[in-house]
Image 1: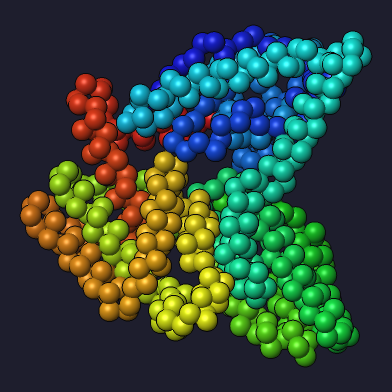
Image 2: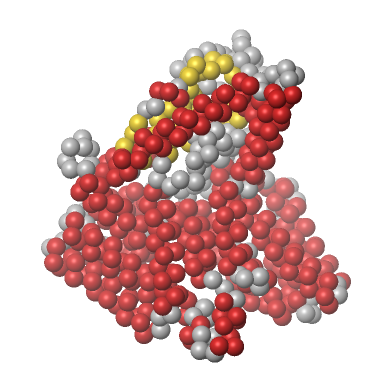
Length: 546
């Protein structure tokens, strides 16, 4: 990673959260400072360094863990956040020992990007600085809206955009919106298909967060509620549409409403922090909840949800259409329940970072690394092709591509490329903390799925691709003289089995990171003081401290 420190954005700042006139209202409204968060690989940080105190101004950072969500930045204290991506705001909070209402802080900035992008890195920093200048000028012009109509119009525009944009990110999240829209679009308007591929995303969030435990609680709660809302809307919409066409079945309706209402009541009794694994993640300390239905009904949220789904299944015309999704949703609820009961999760000693460190001991040769990236991608293509064929998304296997009259039907088929886009996005978000690699993993999955779906690989071709990919990996290790990572843990033990699973889950991200490091080393010869690998780890550690 390369870091830059743009002094043109630094400033001495007086925060006054009680001032809600004009554009000053922005600072007490949930907002994101910059607008370049859509650019992958580039991150700008704003660090707020306290100069005065004790005071009554608190910085709110809701996507973080509980102990970081409210920060009172006093003299010598600081907090840093992603200038273009992290939602935050300030509030006035009465403090018993406070001598000041407002606070004075230094706003300091730096940005970072992969070293291989050095030739455009400064342009990214300049774009942030120019936007900051523009925004500051607009704020100053509209700080006193009663001055003239221009100031009033600018203030209303700034506050309106901030209120809408900030609320959307705080409540739902732009990335969640993107995932939901992509997966709903993939279904091509088919209601039950939407339920299958978009209505089950919240289960993925639950399972991945519980098993890998590498997400901040604030973000997990926001994401889980957002994805659960999508599922609830799809269930309600498809059920209501069927009732409008064929009539309401009172038994089905009563059972569904009773079950979901009971689950919602249990959620309110437990609260979002405990519902979404705050205790399991080590972020919330709480005594057991004993208020009804807890202490009386075992696992009331799961039970209520399954009863609600059963109510939908009881509808005479909706039920048969919903049957496959009913079984899928119930199985996923039971899977989550099983995880909660057993506490199954990846041990801290087998985290992404520690497993990657072990993996790299067997992938030092540049030729071996590059060969592995291509052979792994080929093997992944084979697996993706098998999945496309198994789920009936290959037109050549169901006759749609061979019948001119079925061209429209072929085009109306569920899009495997969009499914890969949305679901790979979810998977890497909760399993791959290396953001640069996460972006590249999603891109590789999308491109590979698109090519395989267009080429309409047969099962034989898919098996051949997988076999060649696996054989190519072994050949690369043989030629390079490096022992395969698999050989280091090839034992019949539970720990070896878990290592094998994690090795395969993280194989593509590991190969991408190793290949990026090779490319960086070739682009930037040994003149760097730390290796690309150590620089990446250093940057990540620095970010985690904030």
